[in-house]
Every structure is written in C-alpha cells, then in structure tokens.
Picture 1 (tube, one colour):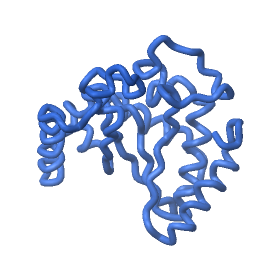
Picture 2 (cartoon, one colour):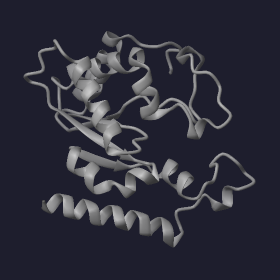
Picture 3 (tube, rainbow, N blue to C red):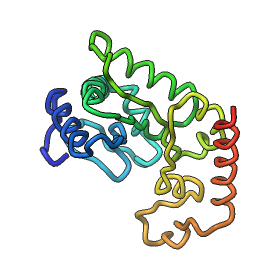
Length: 193
C-alpha cells in the first residue's frame, strides 16, 4: 500500500525476507492480502460495494484473484527458506474454503525448490461460521489466530466505523466470551487428538 502500486513477486519476497532476517530466527506470521472493508486502494481494481465488510474481501478475493494471490504465495514460500514463516489465511468462513486456498497456495508454488522452506498454514478466526467449525479447521490448520475486530463486528452486527452504533462494538458481553470459550474448548480437544 505504501508504494501506491502492486508489488511484484520479487519485491514482495525481498520485503518478507527482510522481516525474517530482522527477526533473527524467530517465527514470523504474515496474513495474506485482506483488502476490502475499511482498507482499499485504487490499484487493486475492486469495484465499490454497498456493504464492503460483507462482500468481496479476504479469502473470497484471494480465491477470485489469482493475479493477487499467486505472486504473494510464491514470494512467501520463497521467503520461508530464510526463516520460519506462518501464513495466515484471512476471513475464512468454513473448512472447504481454507482447504481450497491452501491447495491453491501449493499449486501457485509448483516448480519452486522449497526443500528448505519452513512454512506453516493458519486460519484467522474472524467470522462466526469459522468459530462454529473450529474443531475441523484446527485439525486441518497448523495454527490459528483470533481476529477480534471483525469477529466483534459480525457477532453483534455492528459497523465498527459507525459512531451511531459504536456503543455495541464491545467485547465486554457474555455472548462474545461464550463464543470464544467454545472456540477454546475445540482447540483443547484438537491439541489432545
């Protein structure tokens, strides 16, 4: 975004590899492109939508736009030879979507020598449907992260950028913690399996 244009595969690789080198052996987590919602830029060529938070963003965008996804996947896979890299898949709604994205990631990297790559694939839990399928997703993923900004917004049907309803954008509600509690139970059983 800072460049004001799409970076090509080599430019992305250099950025990612630089981060991994700076982390000096510690694992690095990088979320795949999640443009849309409150983040946009004209060079992505994404038409405006009436409700962009519920539209063409995150994993939906990545599945539909190999021109954005494939170069990032290849750059990340190449960078994983420099250090341990955890790729986080955004806005996952269900297991088949995650599996398809991971398959396409691997397909995009076909032909690369990744024998020394240290690459892990993870799910971002920020959509209630994914949380309800946490056990299955955790069994398929290498790791997971909870995206509270979007998750709070979707659980309470509240636009986090709308001052008129901002009072409902809060994690301090029992139902939110119940959802996270169910997620944690699924994670516990996943780790025991």
